[in-house]
Amino acid sequence: MPNTLVMRPTDLRGILRYIPQFREKTFVIAIDGAIVGDDNFGNILMDVAVLWSVNIRTVLVHGAAAQIQALATEKGVVASNLDGSGVTDGATLQLALTAANRVTHEVLAGLSVADLRGASTNAVIAHPMGILRGIDHLCTGRVERIDVEPLQMLLQSGIVPVVPPLGIDGDGRSYRVNSDAVAVEIAKAIGAVKVIFITTADGLVVNKELAHHLAVDELAEALQRGAVAPEQVSKARHAVAACKAGVARVHVIDGRVDEGLLAEVFSNEGIGTLVHANAYRQIRKARKRDARSIEKLIHLSVENEELLPRSRADIERRIGDYFLFEVDRNPVACIALHVYPDQNKGELACLSVRPSHENQGIGRRMVQFVEDRAREAGLTTLLALSTQTFNYFRSKAGFADGSPDDLPPERRARYEQSGRRSRVLVKAIEPRAPAVPPAG
Image (cartoon, rainbow, N blue to C red; front, side):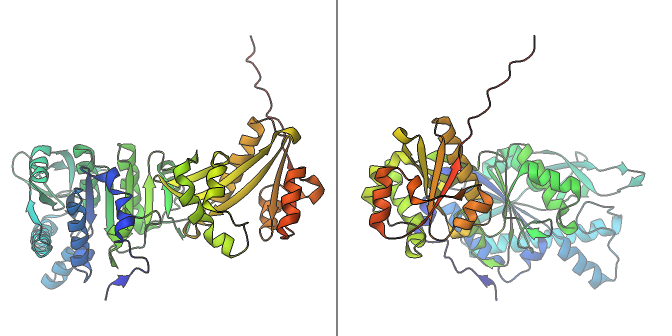
């Protein structure tokens, strides 16, 4: 039985937030051979059908390592390499040709069940990988170029291109090619906005922990340090290559999770690892239409008596004080800075992070952002009131214990009226040091 998500990503409202970003765009989906043989593979193709139904085009690239291994065992042959990155001898190439053709047929058959049309192409033009570090890689190939025209013709006709991990040169010779590399080269050639690697792991493991979000430079640095799980180095390297070539997002997800593809594409949280190349996250000033999002963000904190209740009308009235932290243009955290100019004081208020995004450093970034805004406004003191998170403000944000006497008169009156007896925390805002002009 495939794993099942607790959250239902197919909720129409959740999907509708993302469709305008991706409509008429193309995703390259690279599916490991082991996933093609999994019970959940049919569900993945149903997810692909959902993408096409909202005008998101897809190219499917598949691997065949698991099938090559199975075929080698069946025939009593030792395969010289499975994933198309090492030495492919003649016998292993024959195994790869047979296995890849079988997998391609299985993918095409699955697309028919999902009510999609598919076609396999010879769009991968390859040449021999050659001799590397003194080792002849024989029948292993490297992608020379992608023949874009047949892929675009299929996509424009509503047909799913299915690309095996094989390449052909101008003389008709075939080569075993790594499917991760094929996916990246196709994405570059056709201008895809996403590459999605569907594998048998939860995502990329970096520093022995599952990484949910990584900037491309972070991942490149982790690769240099040897901090990526060895069996995932290929996915990590190709994710970096894709982002640096202009693909905005690369995802690595577990293909055994039912509706996992939709959960990754149509939700902030996703289920695996997202490697991003551009402004995936940002803090921005709230607008009036954001009041509902802020109200939803703080709902749980209000229920837990961590935050003072605020009505939507209250939020709208002071919307200019609020800031939102967005992930792919969806709010996941909020904070406010209420300014008391006659006192040169500001209050850091309404800090709330969606539970799915806790422990990612977002709260600290929001606090630092408000502190910088207070400094820019010429404030000398930043206040925070807390009933439960005062230790966080003291240990992580540099606040010290204060007293109600530190509050401006109007804020003091509301403090007494609330009866919450919140801790008052205070932080002196040091002015930014002036830039030193260059000598000479």
